[in-house]
Length: 159
Image 1: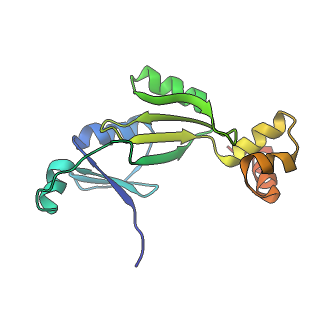
Image 2 (image 1 turned 90 degrees about the horizontal axis):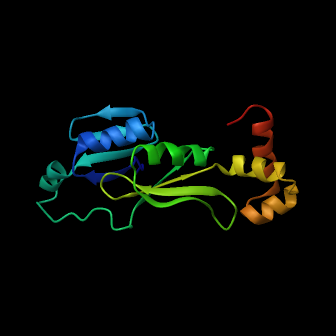
């Protein structure tokens, strides 16, 4: 067996497709009309169509039970862009206990979208604040080698 992707059931496929494509910048891999798969391997499926496939059972959306995670290293810029588009936030940019900057917002169907800086960027940022590699590893909970790789990727033009 091979895992393929996660799928969210959405009320309005066009609204959700526009949110993920136009707002979050995701590239469409396949568009079958009532089902759209994005690169990064997640999909959305039109509720009215999907419901018929599962015997017209009730579908509850949102309810803070599902989150999709994306990485974008300028979280504050993303927050401004989302706010300008009227996106509703779970919370605006904040630091997690391991110092990673994240924000959480809702997609058009109430699913949570988390956008966080990569751990490589976090390592680079903390090092720029004068935090030693070993301490970064402790704070973030990753091996020192991973901290160094992150810092190196930004020293060589990584993003």
